[in-house]
Length: 178
Image (cartoon, rainbow, N blue to C red; front, side, top):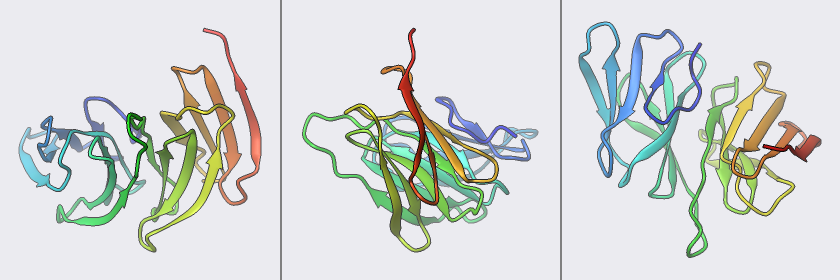
């Protein structure tokens, strides 16, 4: 299913819903793919929301905004059920990733200074942080279907880091040529 990050929008696992954003400061829109109907709006970010991702059953949507926050949305009601603010040093722009782990209560998120974190939005805590091999921020990531392994990378830096989500143990890191 197409549930990963995308610059234009993201489909839910069934392929029947599309989440997009209206641009700067606008809400996230949820559309019926077959009807083209606007089903609901998710309001709360003060800047453009990108990336976005659905959880495995399509009941939750995670979004990251340039307002320096991550939000979790209930897809059925449109209400925000979790928020994580990311403080940034002056002049540092947040490259972001947001991907649900299979348990549906935890999300992989990017932090400044090359940290990838697992955020449990129901408990409102960061469960694990992993430092990457370079002092910049990773901007993309994917989680193995069983949730045990994360691969995060930075296309800009040509860097990859894979690690165990339970222990934080690094499996592999490195750089690749472009």
